[in-house]
Length: 427
Ligand SMILES: Cc1ncc(COP(=O)(O)O)c(C=O)c1O
Image: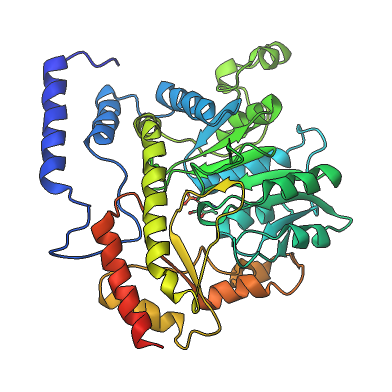
């Protein structure tokens, strides 16, 4: 249904704008200081776009999602975008496509995939769900990303792929990683769920390998409430992902005709050519994405400014705090600001976090620490390559403090003032 009643729509838009102006105050308020890990990236414009979808009654995946997929893929200089309902779903869909029988030279059950030990749960679970074996390698303690030397050393006869994670938006060493993948004939999957807006030598991360995935969860660089997307330059993988995303039917593929021709007796609307899930996003999410995407560059710039302010202010404590180092040739997008306590620090992360909480500054572990130490991993086949000492160290001695686009100079000063008073009191 197209929206025709312009006067009523204008009053809906005006009411949303008035509500947001009156009630949405997420910027730092020195009179009641709170610094959260994330603040919403959206406002009246996005809510208006979502409400318009609801008013049109066209809410399930259709034109808005398709439009956003095209805009996103184009902005990332990729050929195909397949939007889904979360970043976790994007990882699942990517791995499901790469293991699917229709994919040439597909990943087979029991094949190994190298992953960084410092990663997220749903980086790993899709590998296990698709009968692959994760091989955990250690990180570089400075960049917090998987160490290319550890990757090379971990390769065994069953290794077929590498799944990388640009931690907190810091690009991996793509020169080394793509070189290893080319020489050792490995499939490259990029979980960029916390790295939207990150580039390496000017190229967006998520476009170096076979498939790149992104998250648009509430707290991420841009948000569609929940949401995610897979990017690929491979038409076959894109078509398979479109089929697996929704029930295994062919409705959303770019070129359905061959399927219709091969199955003339089956209603094309209900033609199932593969297995499938329901990982579809809603129109509301597509519409919101189209409003958010043009704002990404500014959000990333603001996050970079925040990170610079924090880094400069905390520099005097570099004897006890280890900062994440931006990868050479890379442009970090600062999903947050990770810190690791050096051996010279006489206090624990727990003490620092308790202090920050007491002054209303949120903090959290860096991703989920060494994911190989999480109890769920022990239930399933996996391999651990090396000691994973650096990922474990980050789990025991690391934390992330806020660094987002709404942190102005006053918010940074507030964080720095309290960090400084804690550090000065713990010599
Ligand atoms: C590296 C990584 N992968 C996957 C995800 C999952 O994304 P989502 O929360 O959209 O499911 C996250 C979540 O933040 C993440 O950090």
